[in-house]
Structure formats: structure tokens, C-alpha cells
Length: 479
Image 1 (cartoon, rainbow, N blue to C red):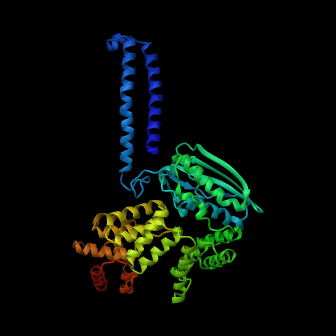
Image 2 (image 1 turned 45 degrees about the vertical axis):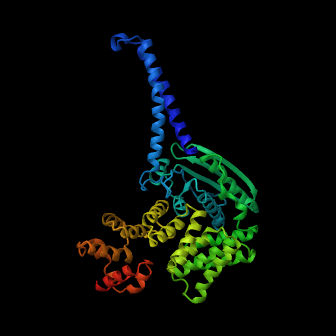
């Protein structure tokens, strides 16, 4: 409702300004020629007609403003302003703050504070924010307001700077609109480091109020989510997250050491346990650690500990959703995915895995809505420069709907076709008796997949459909 009032107010203001200008212009013109000869009426009569017409047209303009608002709420998901719920929401990006220390070693603190601010925004359901990865990719691009609005669909941008001096933080922050670049809100903070959570809360609260007005924002109850009262533990946590985002083997090892140090400094730091589980998961996924029962069990134990300390940690619920999905425990995956999404409706990793689970449970249209939103917020997942993971997820959903044309468009957009999309597209072509042997997507990677153990790969599709699994395995072995 608040959004609608703002839209109507803007349209009405613009209409009144235009009407006043038109009346002034009409008055000047009527003084310079005979209105009776042109219109068959006196200038006074003409002006009266203009006044009446303007008054009559005002309700029409108001109705048009409401109509276009409704149209935007029901526009296709390709529009960057539409979310999975179908509601129009202000779209925001937080550009990584400048590090005024000129200290690369201290950059983790600056980036960590900004990352936490992004996470805070992502937990506010009434707005939509770009993912951490996309925001950080904007750091060096120096895009104009027009490009930020047209290429990323942004309504507002948050930027600022941070200087750390001993135990103090000096933070400057501003919110600017992308239409004209006007600063909507700004502030400066000079506080001790231990007040960093209060500063983050105030930044998010003030900006959210500036965007959507005075509302009750339940997500900002930071007292229940503050990772630690120990600033040393918090700094080790930020170092661990910073190294985790580098995705190299050495950085992954350092990340786990940092997170161990955070736990030693404060054994009640729930996020440290959750991020260590994530770091181990990254190491397993990238081959930095040999999979063993002990290592795999440690991930579950870390997540259990984190959730026991903080049941509202959406990262834990997201990771549990991933684990349950990989183990084909679809009902449990759905419960964890629902919890994670309820806590954080703007995190593309949460939205994506939730959409994947919905596909397996037959909720294909709803699952595709979430996968579309994840693609809009983060086309390329964190730590990957050319990944087609988001497109492959969309391909799978449209395959389940037998959307042949859409699937062909998606696979043509993939830089590197994965074996699942490749095999499913062969099955889709075969089902419709269409030739595929001379098509680029088929020939380009055929040899790459020739030595795969298809029984293992198809099991990793997590299909929840034994008949389809058997059909695909038979097809793969015949190629």
C-alpha cells in the first residue's frame, strides 16, 4: 500500500506541474490571437474549458498510475523488478565500501562489514537486493547511473568508506537513487569496533525506512543473530569468510584455520561453526580434501552445533537443504529450504536450492519462479566466472515441462554445457524424433562425456523419478 501511495503521489505531482505549465502557456497564446476566430468562443470560455478538462482528466491519470502498477506486478519474470512472489520491490545494491586504511591486510574487515550489511538487507522481505557476489563485482566497474538502472534494474545504490583506527571505526555511508544520482540519505559514524553491529543495524534500518517508510522490520532483531560479543572472534570470522570467498586451496586452508580461531575465541559463535562447515563443503567439492566418513560427519556436527546455538541461522538451514537434496531426502530438504527462504528471501543460493527441491517434488511452475529469481539476482554463482549453473537449473525445470523451444534457447546460452543438460536435451530431441547429431551443443562436448560413469552421474541429478532414471541410463549407454 505504501508503494502504491508513493506512485500515485508522484504521478499526481507530475500531472499538476504539467497542468500549471500548460495553463500558463495557453494564457500567453490566447493573448496573441483571436480565440473567437479560431475556437468560436472567447478566451475566458476557452480557459474555463481547459480548467474543467484538467480536473476531469485527474482521476483518469490516477487510474492509469494504479493500472501500470498492477501491470508491473503481473509482468513476466524477465523484468528485474519482479520477485518470486510477484510483488514489485525496490531493487538495491551495496557497492563495497572504500578501504581508507590503504591496508590490504585490513581489507577483510571492510569487506566483511559490507557483506554483513548485504546479508541484513537480504533478510528484509520488503526490498530486493543484489547478491554479495554481484555487488562485489560492481566494485571496479564504475558504472553510470543509467547502466546501473538499465543493466541491473537498480533503483538505489549504497556506497561509502571505512577507516579502522586502533579500536575505533569511522564509517561514511550514503544512499543514492539511480534515476538522477541524488543522495537520499547519508550519515557518518565514529564509534568503537564493538559497536559495529549497532552501526550495521542503523544503516540497514535507516535506508529501509527511506525506501519503504516506517514499518516493523522483524528481520532486524539483531540481538538474536549477533554472531558474538567478542570482537576478536568476529574479526577471525570475517577473515575466514574472506578467505572462503577466494576459492583457492590455500585460501580454503586459511579459512578453516581462521574459523577455528574464531571458535576458540568464542565457543558460542554460531556463524563460525556454520562457515567452517561451508568451508569443508567447499574443500570436498573442489577436491581440496579427500572425502571420508570422518570429514563428512564433521560437516553435520558443525551444522548441528551452529543451529543449537542459533536456530535462526539461515546458512545452516540452506546447507542442510543441500545435504538432504544430495541424499535424496526430498521432504527433509523441503523443510530446510522453507526455513532458509523464510529467514532470507533474497539470497540466490537459498532461492536456487529451494527451487531445485520444488522441481523434484513436482511443483515445477513454482520451482521455476524461484530459479528465475536466483538467476536475476546472481546469474553466475559466487567463485565462478563462466558457470552456467543457473541456466542449467532453469533448463532442467523447463525439461520437466517439455518446453522444447525454451530448452533450446537456454542450452544455446550456455558457454559450457553440463552432462545433465546435454543428456536431457538428447532425450528431448529423441522423444520428438528430432535430429541432433549435427547440432553444436551436441558435437561440442560429446567426446568430453564419453568416459563418464553414467550411473553415478545420473544419480547426482537427484531426479526423484526412478522411471526417468532408468530411461536416461539406457539412453546414455546407447550413445
